[in-house]
Structures are given as structure tokens and as C-alpha cells.
Image (cartoon, rainbow, N blue to C red):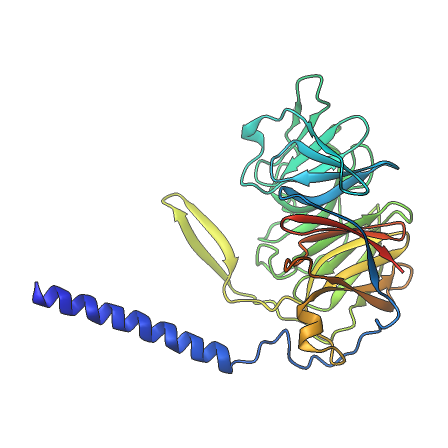
Length: 351
């Protein structure tokens, strides 16, 4: 009994010592996000004014609008939150979906006046539901994918795997789940044989200019292409970090017969979410500019704005924390930004 007690105290001492050591290291280590990053921002004249706000805790992102209502994807597949622009009146639209076709909690939702389309990267399928008839499931694409945007009624741009690519990497392709048609990219993606992790990013589509934009997470690069996957140009975000992606993979066992693929070491995230609207790219930067204070950067989500015509930087805006919550998603509308927080939705006016 005495030996067991002594052994327990030794384990406790080791754990406490490790915790103290981690705390000391964290205190003396410079957070790369807040260090000097070699660039400045233009943001003095652009501020946001709150137009409306409301408490909601199940919204994820804005996916559709009408002149009277906002429609939000929620934490439940097939369940759409509908609010007015004042975030006062609300109700739900519920579309029946087969549970076995929505896996892993990661899915894309596209809403139109006729129904909802839900694409599941893990299930490799698209489910269409109009709330009145039985949902239809299309086994498309055939391989897993990570990013998708809708460019037509049943036409999408994907970033994912394809059997035509003989390596462990992801490419872009245009596909139609109903017809089964697929058009592969031509020399867009850098082949790294890392499951596409090092070149991951955020994919968006601008309906007014019919252009797609892809902003890399781990380096200061983005490209703009047309809907036939012809590159229009490649450009750079205003920061100076050319690459921070780790090229090594790690395989983590999640069960006896299943493994999770991840980066072999932490990557420094340069860019986050992005959105496009009427010829402009709004990109969430994860790096502090040299002319920003740590407090200003820490209390806001920073959006750097670029022209989709030539990729040139224009200026930046700050989305503030709301009731001590950081923004989790945003959507640009006409002179408005709709922002979703963990338990709130706020509509801002861009002055």
C-alpha cells in the first residue's frame, strides 16, 4: 500500500511538473500570429455598424437570401433556420434526408426556391429534397472530396480525389451529379503526394462575375479561374508568408480498421474563410499586420479585400467580437455583412 501511494504521488508530481513546464514555455514563446509579419493594412476609413442582432445557437453559416429573409445552415442536416433581416422573427424549414447518406458531421448545403441539395464528402453523395417527395440520392462523386461550390442548378466545382490521378493528392474538377459528367482541371494543382493537405484552402464562387477563387490556408497565394477551370491568374495576399505547409503525413489510428490522415507537424495558418461578392474577394487573414496592435487584431476577425479582376489588394475591414464571442462565419451581401457567432447572428452595415 505504501509503495502504491508513493508511486501515485510520483505520477502526480510528474504531471504537475509537466503542466508547469508547458505554462512556462507558452509564456516565453512568441505567438507567430502576433509577431512582426512584414506588411501593413489599409483600414482606417472602413468600419462596420450593427444593423440587427439576435440570439441563435444552432446557426453555422448563411446559405441563401431573399428580399425578406435570411436562410442559415444549422447543426442538423436538412434543418434550415429562416429569419428576417432584423433577426427577430424566425422559423425552421425541415427537409427529410436519409441518415446513412450524411456521415461524419461534415456536409455542404445548397438551398434554392425548389429544394435543398446536401453533399457529403464522406458518403460521396448528393441528396436532393424538396420537403414534399422522398429525397433522391445520387452517388456522386465516386471519390472523397473536401471542397465544393455550386455554379449552376446541378453543376458543381469540386476539390477532391479522382481515379484518373495516380497519386495521393487532390485536384479540381467540374461535375454534375445528375448526368454524371466530369471535367478535370488542367495543371491547376501542385502535386505533393500529401493527400492534398499542404495545398488545402477555401473555395468560393462569385455569381455576378462567374469566377471561382481558391485561397490557400498555409501560404499567401490564391488563384481565380472561370467555371471551365481555366486559370485567369494567380496572385498573393498582402502578407509575406510564402509557405508554412508541412510535407510529412501522420497516420493516427481511430479504430482497429480505420486510420485518420493528418499533417505530420503543425502548420501555420495564413488564411481562413473567404467569400466573393460582385467582383471582390473578402479573405479572412490569420496574421497581424505590423501597423495593428495585438489588442485590435485579437478582438476582431480581419477581412482583406481584393479585386477579382486582377487580384490587387484594396483595403481591409474588421469584424468585431460580439458579446465576447469570435465570429465563426460571414457572408457578404449588398452593403451588408451577415456574421454568425457561436450563439448570436449579427447584421452589419459596411459604411
